[in-house]
Amino acid sequence: MKLAACSPFYEEFVLIYDKQGFNAVIWICFVVTTVIRQKYTT
Image (tube, rainbow, N blue to C red; front, side, top):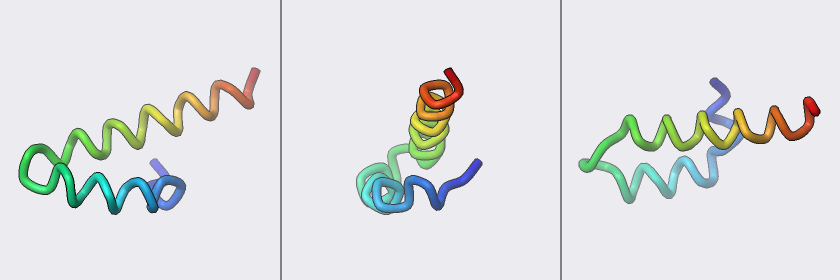
């Protein structure tokens, strides 16, 4: 997982989901990178 790829969004999500659920931030970032990969892989 490359968190650096979504670091701008990552920092914002950390502020939003700070105490609500850090796993949600990582999951969103993972999904976004996966979707982007599939787009360019096709």
